Image (cartoon, rainbow, N blue to C red; front, side):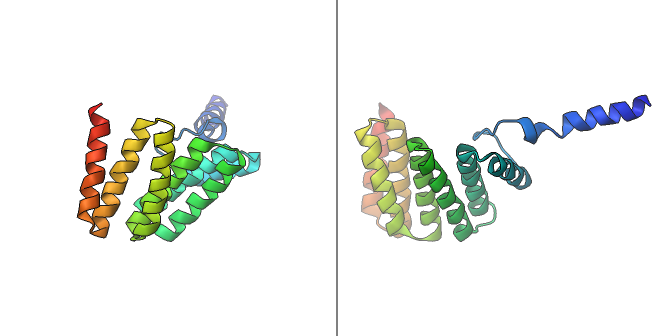
Length: 164
């Protein structure tokens, strides 16, 4: 009898981690966990969590499986949900992720366009940390495209911001 009670209690406490836990963007989740979180967010109509999980799934598809098209679909769904919640930071982070994925896929012009828009936004809002990240990604994108002069210019801009 006690064994059955113990098994029931053990089962309850070990299987509720995703059911009751908050999504943490900085945490590491398995692909299966992300899909469970996605289902919970859908059931709760939670746009913010949906957007954040879609970003993680987009990262997973691109980084682990090199499925850039599927990755971009997830990012675009995340973008839609961030727009629905008017989350400017989420929109910008998603656009940054899209730009990186464009670079990975060889769509340099599209990546540069997004990154330059982000650079303008971060410069205007004096967000030097994000501006340095965007300049570094511009450096990497120009380098991948073979435009070494612009690559060096953006690397110098990154280094200039990081000195301060």
